[in-house]
Amino acid sequence: VVNSLLSDALSTGDNYSTVACRWLRKNEDIWRAWVPDPSQCFPQFGLFDLRSQSFVTDRKNLGPADTVECRACPAGLKSQRFADNSGVTHICQVCEPGSYQSTSAATSCIPCPSGEYEDQPGQQQCHRCEAGKYQDQLGQSDCKACPVGTTSLGRGAAEIEDCGCHAGSIKMVAGSNNCTKCSEEGMACPFHSTVDVLRSQISPLGDDFQPRVLEGFYSAEVAARSIFKCRSTSHCPGGAPAHCAGGRRGIPCSLCPKGQTWLQGRCQDCPVSFPILWCLMFAVVLGGLVLLYHATKQFVSARANLVDGFGMVCQVFWELGQTMAVISQMTIDWPEEAQDILAFAKFLIFDMDDFGLRCLLPGFRTASCYAFIAMCFPVVCLWLLLVWRVSQFWKEEWRWKFSRTASLMGQVLMTEFSTISNLALVPFMCYSHPNGMHSLLKHPDVICGQEQHTFMLVIGIMLLVVGVLFFLVGCAYATIMLPAWTAQRRIWKVQMFQFLINRFRHDSWWYEVPLLTRGRRYAECDPFLG
Image 1 (tube, rainbow, N blue to C red):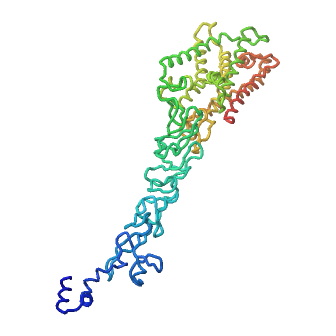
Image 2: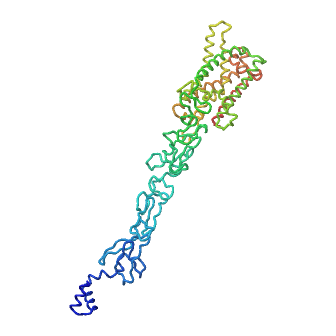
Image 3: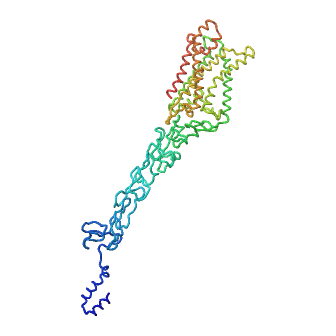
């Protein structure tokens, strides 16, 4: 350029100003790029119109050069390359919905992270998803709603797994979004409860969000939402399904495993001596009945001797123990001091679960054990009849009389009348579970209406009809007829019902029947108070 100017000055002889002016007119395409352009902005900047005090997105309608300048793009905008006929420049463009920019002089916008959204353009930050919504993708302008029946713990849920069942409901199938209502009784279901957490008792959200079975209730492993109420709170500590105390199992924590029995507060292996003791006890009872036949008086006397008085006292204490045992079966929280006494009294009403009966009958179901106990009474009667029949082949002085044998049978049935009444009513005493099912109050593992219960009902009805009603009606009839039989000197009939009048004066011979009904009434109170 300089050489060109000097050559022109020498050849024309013009002054330097004229030469320079002539060069400018001829070479505008060269020097035009040397002139600063206020509308040519670099990255991180954008066109700013001083007249409107705003950023513009093109160079149309721009005013004089002194009304345009480049400014750094503020937060919420990005610097973007722009080309037109005037060349390349940069403009400030607002961030689109779903993105943000929190700093100035930025060349790009940042997509909203998962768990957040932005529905307006040109924002400096995104908003967290509201409770009940989630967003698992980047750069979104809205959040997705949680599936029906679920919600999120708070704001900012970033995946669908953050949506959990509402408090009071539980997800039964992993991977599904179906929530099922929890039992209103016996089960705690906080937010985000799942059956997997219920079984493992480990929640990723912490202990406060851990579903559990409440103390005193039980649920099976395969049907964790079906809640059973335990008869004894100490047997069911709660927590995970199928969790029982002391090694118990079954519904609801009512049985020890096969080959074990309840000893010292937990299930233990059956001692070897238990079956032997049971067999020995049966032998003692059957042998004692034979001795009792010979110990009883052959005729009724107006005055009681010392043996009679001692027998009456023993019978009173026996009946007191039976009454206490019947009362102990009511669902009442007895003081600890009374529990040991009541537990021993249960032996008097053949409540043998705490005395190792299942050690004698391993593998027997509850209904079979119930039938075994119920059969003890007819077996005793058959035993006495067998001894009577065999005795007919003995010497005459050792032969049993049928009338006295019948009286001894009546004495046994009368002594155990409260026991028989209570035992007969066992299948009729059901209590309800939160899941709508019913169990026997005495045997919670037996579900009312199912096969075992039906079998027990048949046994119970037979006991009730024969051992309770028939016996009571027979005693009442005999009480009415005794004066006539005595007057007619039908001594053998009087001897058959001697057990009814042995304890009373002759003017109160009828009083045993009201005492019998008392035992039945105690047994009938159990279903109502239970």
